Image (cartoon, rainbow, N blue to C red; front, side):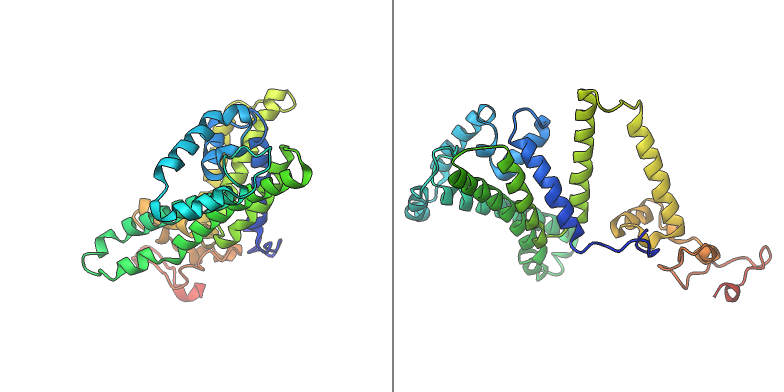
Length: 304
């Protein structure tokens, strides 16, 4: 909304910068003991691996990972994996095999995860069309979004692991600050799958986390019913924008409003409120209701 008014200019790759800063904070806290809620810590363990978590929190996870990898290792990759596993490893690294194997394993696993998630979403969304257009399957399985999400998650995991290993080799010590540096650099992998939704969600959840830490430390006040107040203000603001400047809403949210209101949000004569300077009719410049002229003197020519 500020951008459309010329008050600010959008920051190039702003979502990537925001995500990188947020990622740095999350993974710094991840490397420290008991600094993150269990749900967030578990999610990060799944993405970047439990070997980077504090030793006392990940002993069982690392042990289980070792057992599973031994059982699931395909025969035709045994020789290659064996050589990768024998690559050098720093004495402070908690992963069981060589650092190169550790980094490549993280990339392959997360790339596969991202690819599968996006492919399944595409498949389900096109499911009704597939019986009539089988060629859609080719588009689904070789979709740019699926490869981009896979590359984002794969590179995020690989960069984080690689930077941590490199810093251990160069500094000959392990430190939670490594998580800060590695998290920031890993965040730039979002260049492959830019998403302001992911960046904003991660940043706002981090703000919530830090605020509650401030309350616990006694430096910030506890505000009763703050979640309800925030939700009410946000809803009011979004609905106000939906009436006076729907073009500034996120397209997915605008489609959601149209769906839940039976398209009635689009059936407003916004040409009447263009006078307020918000370009309210930008999405539907030619829309004019079929008025019963017995009860109004409104003429579209007067608002053109």
